[in-house]
Amino acid sequence: AQKVTQAQTEISVVEKEDVTLDCVYETRDTTYYLFWYKQPPSGELVFLIRRNSFDEQNEISGRYSWNFQKSTSSFNFTITASQVVDSAVYFCALIIQGAQKLVFGQGTRLTINP
Amino acid sequence: GAGVSQTPSNKVTEKGKYVELRCDPISGHTALYWYRQSLGQGPEFLIYFQGTGAADDSGLPNDRFFAVRPEGSVSTLKIQRTERGDSAVYLCASSLMLAGVADTQYFGPGTRLTVL
Image (cartoon, rainbow over all chains, first blue to last red; front, side, top):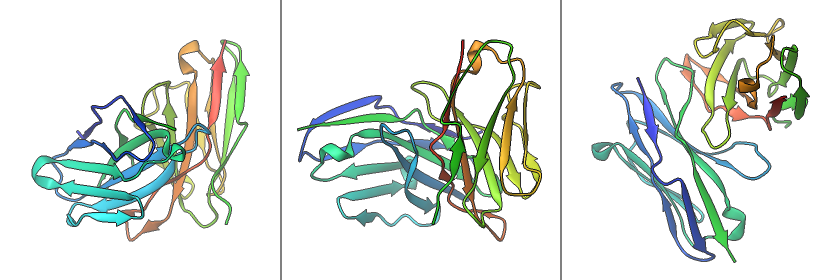
């Protein structure tokens, strides 16, 4: 069975600080995909990134960056120079090859204070 | 283009009643998924459709829950004899299927169901 753990339930920082959201996953499958979604107060899950298990290159998109390390089964998400609009619940999720269901972590509620 | 839409956005019902929740996927997406999200939790998988057929319904909690997708587009999640524990946000997602590989799932805004 697959499992995703987001140990940080809530994080609160002041605007412009950098913040890292942790994600640890468990699976016995060798081919899988990892995702991050953002859920703002409006409730809709917004897709941020997808990585496959064979691509460990880190990725940067503007102020967002992701660090994928198979050795520690982690897929961490860093927001640089945080902004109030980044306030949301962030979910890490896993899907294995051949399956169609996303397995989500519990989510991390991020609050950026002005 | 238009994203996934879900109606109603909110539904309040009484214990024991029947409810239907509707999902309109992104045009051209053949795969459709239902998830349930309880307060403070991550979404949990309920059922997956490929075309008109339910390819995986392993997440449906019991036989009070049923979903259909008769024409391979719009889907309806049906809950009979609702219980207070059914209160949650029901999320729908859709995706392309690319040579059997699960493509990214795009989510709708959800239906918040409250059972009194």
